[in-house]
Image (cartoon, rainbow, N blue to C red; front, side):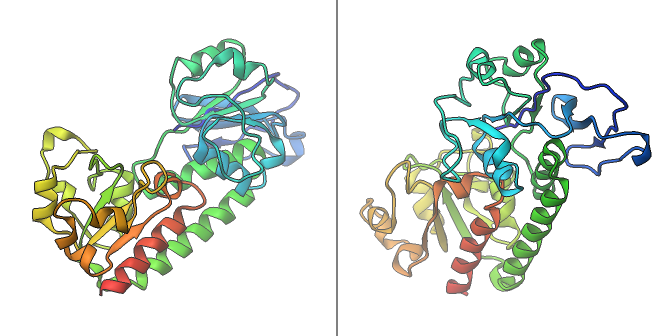
Amino acid sequence: MRPVRTFGAMMAIVAVTFTAGCGGDGKTGDAASGPKAAVTVQAANGAVTVPARPERIVSLSPTHTETLFAIGAGPQVVAVDDYSNHPPNAPQTKLSGFKPNAEAVIAYKPDLVVVSDDLNGIVKALEKVKIPVLLEPAPTKLDEAYDEINDLGLATGHAAEAKKLTDDMRARIQQTVAASSKAKGLSYYHELDNQLHSVTSRTFVGQVYGLFGLRNIADGADKASGEYPQLSREYLLKQDPDLIFLADTKCCGQNAATLAERPGWSDLDAVKHKGVVELDDDIASRWGPRLPEFVKAIGDAVQKVQ
């Protein structure tokens, strides 16, 4: 999902402008020139001008909702989409991030909207009524995920908190990977659903596994299938991965027991030697503050089979 930032009324009295590349460093003007009136954030939809500290933020992205609360901007959030289930105190509504309705969003009178996808033309619709929208799409690598967190920090008046969060995330992830340095060469299968859809190493999730040097069996699937191939049962059984990560425990009710009941799967090494890892679907699919937890789950599994 992609975050969008909205700008309601423009305060144009001696503005101090902050410029940031998608998560890049902000540049401040002369502090003596006047009070901060606005910030400019470089998002996927261009340079977006936002009130210095927006007080009515709407998030249509579960990942960005988590980030907003993690950096201390939670009290500024007035509404989040129906899939934003973390943290529990986020003001969840019936707003959809997949089929966003501009009128429904506008009803919350936001001064910033954050999205991770420009669906239903939501970005242009909000820009037409002068609401700042920040489009922050799903990243392709870790640095982009950190950049987006810093973008949200800059846009909401919590730049220092955002930097502290990303520094902590980097440190925790590096520590986990360092403790599992002997994982190189182990093979794995990451399951998105019980129809055997997976991810290749070119995806963000695949690159997270790549930190450990793990070999992704989905990379050998039909190239025409793209980055999220559907594997055949025969192919998967032949590959016999050392580790199986289930990111469909919530959506599809999958676990180690249901896996063992699939025809032929009980003979897989991962099933026989407790190499099946039951992930939290949400944590395994989002690129925000809980990313280190996903990395830790991989690290713990790797250490068990080393």
